[in-house]
Amino acid sequence: MRVVVATGNAGKVREIEEALGGLGWRLEGLNGLPLPEETGTTYEENAALKACAAALTMGLPALADDSGLEVEVLGGQPGVYSARFGNRATDTERNLYLLERMRYMANRRARFVSVVILAHPDGQIETYRGELTGTLLEGPRGENGFGYDPLFVPDGETRTLAEMTVAEKRQISHRGRALAALMRAHADGRLAPSS
Image (cartoon, rainbow, N blue to C red; front, side, top):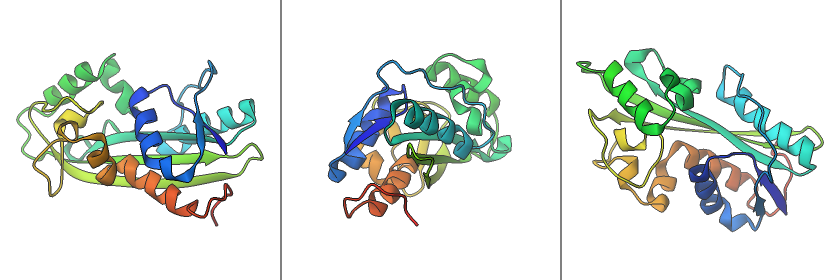
């Protein structure tokens, strides 16, 4: 079964391929299709914008996610704006901006949230959500992750997400949990909306 992965983020593509390998789906890229701007105010809206656009344009089921980091002392920021937090262009710049905003703050609690949408060309939409709680460090550690992974230590762990292998991260991550829910819903081999 062919499924379009509606993202330009290579790190997300790797995670999705690893997580859904057991389904036997043939995951395809966007083939130059531009994604719509993320104008939604929720993860669900932004993921649906991308998945629906790809499904309708390419005539295939399309998978997209939107995810973000919600920091307790920042009132849930950056949230849906995580990828463009502080108008910074790179992961490193966004991490430094976040650390600067949190300087001298004792509460370093945060959570990652991911919503995965599987949109079908007939307009049906499946939604899967995953969360991961943890603590933010005062400086980055690790080379394996992307985004805010080098700053985030999940509850019950001593390593950051960036210090884990892709397989280890997938087992516990917010996106991994959302994809595991999708995997369970389609474990029988059918590509049909879950009830």
